[in-house]
Image 1 (cartoon, rainbow, N blue to C red):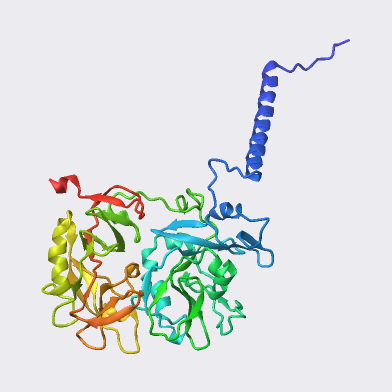
Image 2 (cartoon, rainbow, N blue to C red):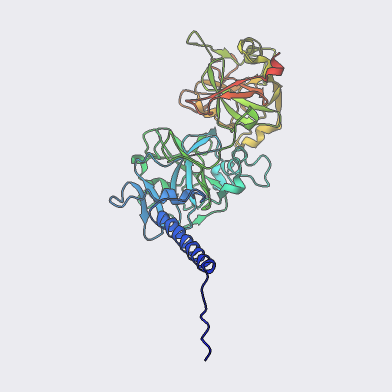
Length: 459
């Protein structure tokens, strides 16, 4: 009788089986740990942090009148009241996050006013000078503001805008909406929704809203945060843009506080060519701000008026008419006396300053592009970024009433026509070579760029 053959499991096979079991167990254990961390608010190191996810973590559960509040009906997360953790820094400007919509897109408004210009609302918001200034289109000289923003195709989507005509302040509605434009103004409805004068949107400055009444006159917010109605269309207004970041925007750093805002772009700034419009830099120990970037130079404006021993320097426009000239008055002063005070005066280059004329009944900023002068130093004109930052100063804007009238910005922040001999403070604007090195600083007002020439050029 033959003995049955017994199959023996070799130690090698046992080892292989154990390795397989350990591998399977390790895989599922790592997945378990990963998803446990996600469920409990921890993100694996190799997983991008989506901005909207971080924002939603701040939802207020106890009080629906302040903080980030979820509207159960619309699915929107809305910031209400006086919050301080909704800052985002993008393309050289601080913005305040207003809401996360039902599609997880993030609407935000600039923390500051960015210009002063005539709105042109007489034909409605869509056809206004403001809308053309904000957004690129097929219209000539459109998108002045959009051109200052970087990577818009990556970050921005159409901004939902309440376009209801409002005549009754007791009945502020938002029944008509459109998302045709990337950039808009704040609506009366959104201002009210956030808490109005008791909210973070009240930044203690006057700024215009995009909401119109049935006569195409616009509402605005005054310095106290109250709502008022513009009584005529030919009054210049302050512009505070609203834009929307897409739902896939990745957070690179920051927690939403002003000192550490959310950051979604972190490019190295090695020279002025890399700077953003809105960045600050130092010249002669004083702050200047980037207004415009060109291929080989940048336009900057002094953040405060020119002073000597703390005393303001006042100068008249001068000359025989309101066309800027280097041979008399303010033009001669800026391109000689002032320019010679700058330590980096050899890095100041000639550029174009627009000085076209507006027309009676037509205050379209695009008309100013019809004429220009070449100079190293001049002043800003209507619709330039940050022209609104200083009052009681001369501008390049020419009076349409007569050729001996030039416009200043008066103490109240409005354009004011005066004669050539009238003396005003001055905020110079000048073109710098964009290859100037950035040696230190982060480009904000508290830490402006410290700039210098290339060592080889300085020898």
